[in-house]
Amino acid sequence: MVSIGTLSGEGLRDAMVDRLAADHQAKGLVLRPEVETAMRTVPRELFTPGLPLEEAYENTAVVTKRLPSGESLSSVSAPFLIAEMLGQAADALGGLTGRSVLEIGSGGYNASLLRELVGAAGSVTTVDIDPDVIDRASKCLAAAGYDDVTVLRADAEHPVEPGRRYDLIIVTVGAWDVPPAWRDQLTEGGVLVVPLRTFGMTRSWALRREGDRLVSQSHRLCGFVSMQGDGASEIRHLDIADGVHLRLDEGQHIDPAAIEGLLDLPRAEAWAGVALPPRTNLSDLNLWLATRLREGLVVLTAQSEAIEAGTVAPSWQYGTPATLQDGTLAYRSKLSWTDRVFDLGSYAHGPQAEVAAGRMVEHMRAWLDAGNPAPVLTVLPAHAPDGDLPNGMVLDKRHSRLVLTFTPNKKGNAA
Image (tube, rainbow, N blue to C red):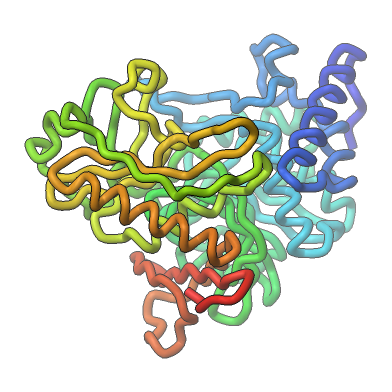
């Protein structure tokens, strides 16, 4: 389809993919050979026009459109995230050769990779609601020689091509819900890969269609610009101190006066009393905490300056599970290292600080005692009766009922 460009571009491209393979290995993942080949083939610089060649091959997202406020509206996603999501799709479907694919959220680069992966017998349709994004994607795809990718402008909250079904729908914008059109446009056994926000935290879920439900096959940490159109959802941030914010999901309301000066109060802390090796995978702990600490759950974010000043010490500055109840804030803290092992802890401020910190740590211990289980996500229609739901924590949204289920990896009771 496309010939490799200049040697400098080829060299940078190969170096990028080498880094991606090493990154996958460090995470316990495997970069699928066909994904590796596609990423060594497609010239990313043609989808980032105006950017210096070296920057086109950095492992970061490239923002292509912003609001006057500076908020990102569209971007070319970071290569590591693209590779992981394509791997999720290929793993769930046993390969993408010959598949019919719908991409929701366009930019061109991901669509060209998909075109390489599906081959001559497959098809790729990419859709976006923004005319500027569609125009840019069309020009970039043409410049790279992918003139057989169908590019459409539409609000993908609704059916894109009524009556048509796809083996794979891959969403490259952050979603708050799963509209019926996504499930209905999938073939039976087809897969939806979507960055879905649950309990204020986003994961890329690979979901296989089983009748009227979608069941997860894998999930990855991720972050994306928010969806526009009828599927848009509000994310609000409430300042709790300079450089420290509480991220609120739809329907959450907190009186700013209730948190004023809260972080100036003495800090209590609690620790799990464990010694975990560096390679312990903690990626699912935050979702476990979210399902256990649902009442009063918020997400704490912090700027580097606030962390360096000691105002807060969260486990992850871009989104740490926290609770705000009875005037007390508790959040998962940074790890405590001793030699080459670490402990899990919680910090809290407020009149019930010791109790709140201890409660969060007890849930951390429970996750460890259960064998660090990973969640399974089941998505059902909004009208699904309680009796049809699997065991787990239910999260009702506008179009769907989401159920997160944790099954212990050793003796214990299923969540």
